[in-house]
Length: 286
Image (cartoon, rainbow, N blue to C red):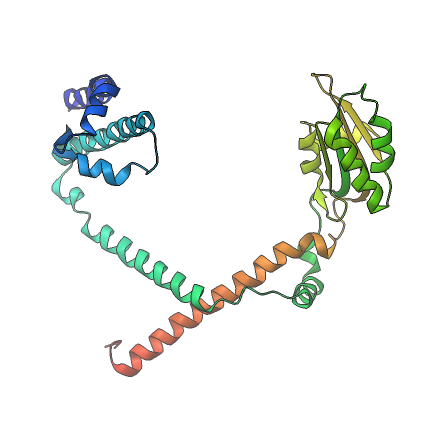
């Protein structure tokens, strides 16, 4: 058995060199066998169905080589498994039937749900769910409304941008964005939305504890190793342990409501099918 395994590994290791790009390129223009491994045979038309359309000649060849190596590895191991495993362990008919049944059931459920699922969730429904389940929306991390700027510290527009980005006037914030467009590396405003503090920290390529310790009032300023200045103006903060604002939870609540509707449809489908089967005699318990 060790010898067979060694042979299999040898085949897999040397296969890339056997199937050079030149060889694969010629295979792609033949109607014959492209490769043989174990008891398997791979034909050109098999590759035609696998290779994505629109690839260049070089990319097609590279993709074909990768696929052939993967296919050959599977075939070689399959041959050894068929030789070495007892017959009883090679019988996978029950597992295949179980998988087929589960897959068909899942696909029909998806078809049934997609035809009937109502994905519209009103603001009133969101608010009602939020009011009834506030214990589910306690913040694990702080969240902030903030504005972020990345710029060279010597930029002549740095101070004007900072002045505008700290304003509560939407027109000033828009002006900060306009000034930053031609002079800064990046300007992002989460003026009307809440974000997890870790989202902001990633802009600094850091963590929230580092960002928080560098804060001076509402401002955070850190210069990175490349000499660029990262600046954030914190408009508002909600601490961990507080109740999250409903607007921060809206998308999560919508997902919960839609998921609940989906599960109700599936449960109703199973119930109705069993009821119908009992009534028409196709389901009988003896």
